[in-house]
Length: 272
Image 1 (cartoon, rainbow, N blue to C red):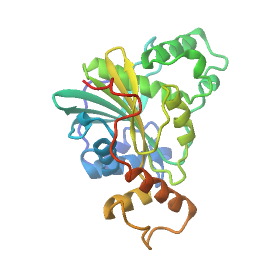
Image 2 (cartoon, helix red, strand yellow; image 1 turned 90 degrees about the horizontal axis):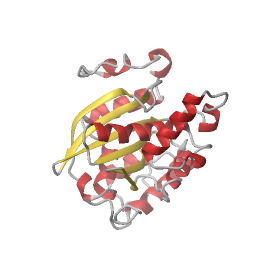
Image 3 (cartoon, helix red, strand yellow; image 1 turned 180 degrees about the horizontal axis):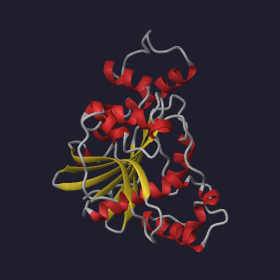
């Protein structure tokens, strides 16, 4: 993996970094949706910025991106294949560095579960599982039915925080799925940390060594974008698509938006 990164000027620059551009770069698929959202924003996209501003701790409310690297590869403990991540972001706020590992999500499923990944596994994979669990602060006997992707990408966020001497590591799933495809997997993953996760909120998962770890699911879908543009107290507008997923999504989002701001669900030990 090279340590020299070339700036992107267009979507085509992002596209060429993909492992299989012909297959991955299609309308509605994760890679293209994520690239469009982040390049158009030239910073944190509105859906992400809103969650950081309204549901995260104060340190995330005024935050600037220093660099963002698409298709970021992070070496994992024990050697072997690196963790492949859709987008890595290094940001700064209140004099502290923060690492973000962003996983794009459309309607594709997550990777196989850990138990499926371990089928006919050599000792090297078992050691990698142990190292990843140690890195992110969870127990090996709890992850068999978890998507392997959620684990190794969270580990990548923590490892990059350690490499950059960052105070906070954030793992975000940036979802464009109208049906919340994969959200059940994320809920089970968050429960490893004793969390009861909510869509469009940032949750403090705990301290891993000296790094504070946060996780979140960003629902960047039609009803969220409409709501953000017209205000949270309005009735569902007539132009909202008249399908069940959008109407249910509107109800969930307005309920969350009307709650008073509060800290993540693990108390205040995440504070500096």
